[in-house]
Image (cartoon, rainbow, N blue to C red; front, side):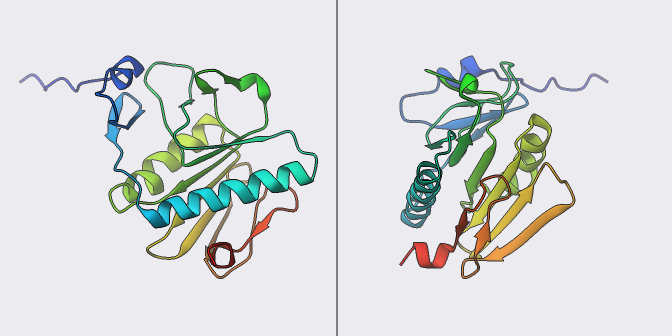
Length: 181
């Protein structure tokens, strides 16, 4: 008995999608992306601005890129993601297409349709690709899971009312609840 062949997609398939259709590619599998809701966008814009302002104020050289922004994680044609927020400190990774390699810090804002991917598939993928810090912001649960991927034993869960400190962006602390006021 012969097993059915599993379709493996490439970045070329992502670029061939109809105009306006967004998807990500992880290990050759396509994951469609639903349009973000209003709360998602509020969190995205607030966090991006706060992180960027903190970096600028402190003379940092990292750059903040909100979605849509292409990240070619592994230097192959089977992995393409658009994290909600990418913080990249190595300027050599950035070109006109996006980021080539792992961003230093990735933030994903959970939508009901993608929670399994953010908490499982992407956590594994970001860890193995070399992302140093990964946050999963869940607006429905009002929680933030903060993973220090350089120190695998450190994972912290916060509520939106808590002060959350970045492990790689020195001195950066945010309170999501206050940010949304």
